[in-house]
Image: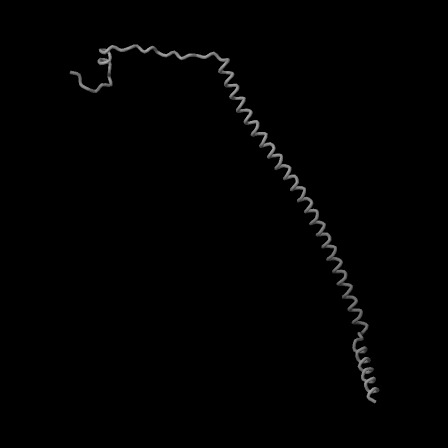
Amino acid sequence: MRFRTAKMAVAVLAIGVSLGGCATRESVEQAQTSADNADRHAGTAQARADQALGVGNNALSVGNQAMGVGNSAASAAQMANLKADANAADVARLKRQVAFLQAKVMPHKRKKHPKVRPHSATQTQAGNSNDKTPRS
């Protein structure tokens, strides 16, 4: 009897659990509609995420191109600066050479220095106007 009672208890329990899990037709349709709406929203979100990823990838490639152009411009500017420094050194050297050659080619004008004549002692005393001592 014990065995039969245990079998009956298990059967009642199994029937109760299986009937308790049943849903009505409306609730199943409502769950299916909710699942379909969620699937559509997920698809839309995935499409927008893919679109945003594409835009981000495009922006990244444009940024990389701009960085390449900037690096090229920086290297060109450095090369131009080096050439300008070399040209400035060449110009200074050429100016020195031109000045040297002009000095060689141009006639030298000599300054005429006035002849200094020795003053006599009497002229020095009489002509000295800077002397503040009274004459006696």
